[in-house]
Image (tube, rainbow, N blue to C red; front, side, top):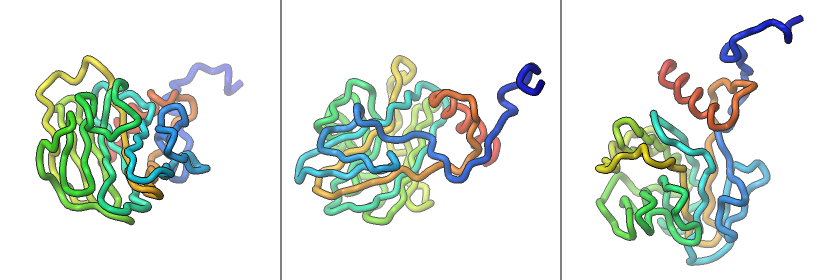
Amino acid sequence: SFLSNPIDPVSILVSTESEPIFNFESNHVSPQLVIGSNFLSIRNTSNKKWSTARINVPMMSGIHRWEIHIDRCISKNIFIGICSIDAKLDNYCGCDVYGWAFLANKAIWHNKTKIRTYGELFKTNDNIGIELDLDKRTLSFILNGYDLGVAVLFEDDMSDRPYYPAFSLYNEDDQISIVPSRLPIHSSLSRTSLIDRIVNRQEILV
């Protein structure tokens, strides 16, 4: 029968429409953040208090890309970046040594410090693309399709721990959403393996 024949699992692809490559989970977000019904958006319910969400997809090598839509940004206080598992969720990404993030007000933050002015101001209805290249040790951003260049060139070895996409909101009703991937989704891969497959396919298709 079909199921009894040995086959290469990589050859089994299911074409889907805008399938997300990851989503938000309640045990990896601050209590002040409400996850949308599709698990692709977060909204801040507190006012003038930093709250962070971390996507539970570990990244340790290779090139990783994802995209975020700014549904609502009240006053330039949204961070988009990466962090390790030790980063705080009750503060902003970049408030400690475990995170790096792009602030809407044209700045990169790390260890509670603005380490450089960067890019352009982003606001409601903008799309932000993120590229983390763990082989070259760079973090870059794309604003509405325009490449803003390398934001961070990491001096230290990045292979000793996994990193995760992270997002921080400050004002009440600030909201962001994950922009789903439009690449084919493999029917039998775990989430972590799926990220690797998508990255590899994207490199081939670009």
